[in-house]
Image (cartoon, rainbow, N blue to C red; front, side, top):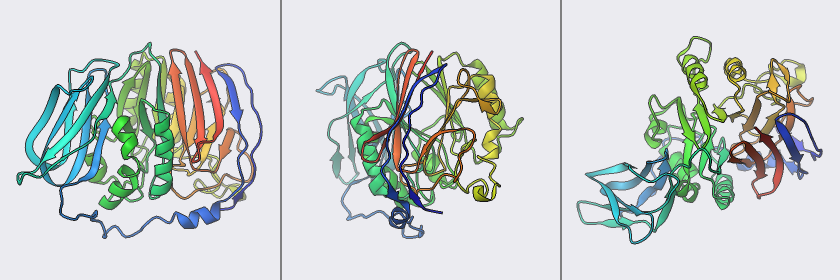
Length: 412
């Protein structure tokens, strides 16, 4: 399935909401060699993180679910300890929140914070035996308001490639996003504690300590308790909604049925119908539209259905309620569709579909012939970066070396 990827060149300009777009030259690469380097570990029994007996962070502090006046901070230690967060807008730190019960996994929500405000924080832990450990000064920011500018990163399918995931996280952190969207398959096997520690939170520790991650669940998490343990999300957790700036985000579990009348379908229709946000985004792991070679049938035999038919059920809702962009993963490459409506290209009012599955999993290839909906695609490790101010959206895509290779803008 893996083949060499040739050079992709071109330029695209279109009208309507999509006002500017650019495609950048891609270097040739031998994907088959990369695949050999990325073999995901299969043994989930050899699971214990390295522990020399000293008090240590198994998972360093990371941010969850920022709102205008609150934020949650989580971390895990290798032995039970009491936890404390000291914080304020500047040093010396004057506020604190603590948990008196000694535990391994900590979750503390800071409340009554100021909107759109940067804070300094520090985490410390203390065992009953008197061992103490604390972080350096870290930072978080509460969510911005609807008239303010903000940015977010998009990654997907990090799976079991800590080197690549770490490179992507480092490049994304350089851009200082307000938060991060993860399109699922955060690890290669959700049952493996080692993978959560060393393949996700390890390489992303700096990024996640400053920018909260909002995930959706993929198939590789196996719906395991670890996913629900390590992410602090609104119930029922496998689908949820959040607002940031002037946007609403709708997060869906595409492993479950999304047919009309199902729980998530009805929830999503109600949530979309009630949304007053200027920008509306949805994301779920499986793409409703995909030009992949063989995940949805053998394209070389003319038998592909060009996307996940379960996820395709949501297209009707996206079009009815004027969703702006749907983000997906699962396919380990980058693809951007034309704006679509009614099973055809509609540059004025169509919905954009972005597949961003290049976070570390073994790369895949696109079908030999172009699909009718494909605008741009590239087989490469990558991340996306979105900047929004009021009615203007800038979307950019970078490879693992930080090279820009696709971009477009939307104006409202």
